[in-house]
Length: 168
Image (cartoon, rainbow, N blue to C red; front, side, top):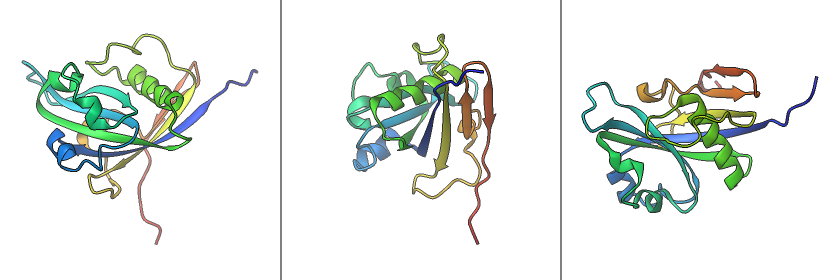
């Protein structure tokens, strides 16, 4: 049996935010990381859902200010989750690996790349927080489809959710 190089990435997600909240609190939109955008596109009648996953290295607002960004294709109920890599060091390589795993597994509607080719063997552990940074004890309804633990070994997927509780 051969050993496969396998990375584990922990992402701390905060949100959901509106674009206006990010504009008003510039501190939230600094740094590098991942983001998820949910809402409804033009003519969509079904429930809002996550539509796009992306990465940025120069601040979330600078990334969104491009008039051709997919954010602007979401016309109603637009919400944004900001993801910070806690471990390992959030280099471009690890941002790309986490993004590739999420896109390939979840297939967000507005992503056009990374949906066909399987990602490298990777595990992403998602910690979900509210806007104020406190832990979510239950996952937000829009992110329920993205498991807390998402692992791909090159052949098999392993998924699951984590229980959140305080140490008493």
